Length: 292
Figure 1 (cartoon, rainbow, N blue to C red):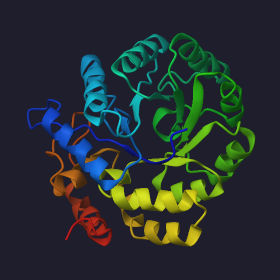
Figure 2: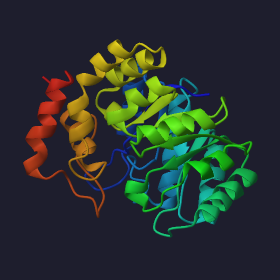
Figure 3: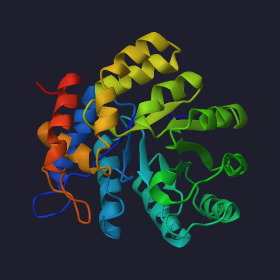
Figure 4: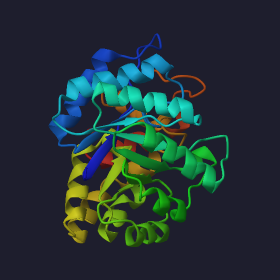
């Protein structure tokens, strides 16, 4: 089981709009130096919705090759087409990813039975560990805990990223899933509490700009050291909030640019962070101690 702090990695781009392979390599080395426990490539924060199909596969391959086994790499391979999700998952497996992260099918609004059949089909087709990803605020599709429990019985489905931010719902999952089923928070604001309740890690947006602090907070939380975990988390709470002033990854890419980690480019229909939010994000970077 992969535990701890995993960065939901941005995909750096050049001013011409292409994936910036050089900056991507530099980002990976930055996160490894800062002590991150794992890297999630081409998830929501990695602009999976606007990367081309080949670009998507190429970024996963580059991340796996650059990491070279130093930490686990989880590849975002979800889609609202089951066929496409299978193909992306097969490509990630061929690239050497340690696991895949599969978001609930967006836009289609499948039933709970449709969700079960979708994820079952992928799990039964591709022999790689698969992590479910429930983020109803973005997908208009909410996978119930009962459906997660059904899916947890399948061999290749090994965990879930729960981005609901609902700790009551999270605790219900913790109480009901098998002990070897990994539970990750996908909500930075509640991630420490989720881990203190029994969750196993955090797939974090904030970790893009404050990886060491996110990793330290997770380490303490997983050891049950609530006071220490919350003390560190309090220094980055502003980031947890302000990195969502506009749709993710708009604020975090702007913040990464302020730290010199990437160029400012982001793909349409997303646009750079609106000027009225600049001061709030800058202040939260300073409060976190990552920008002077």
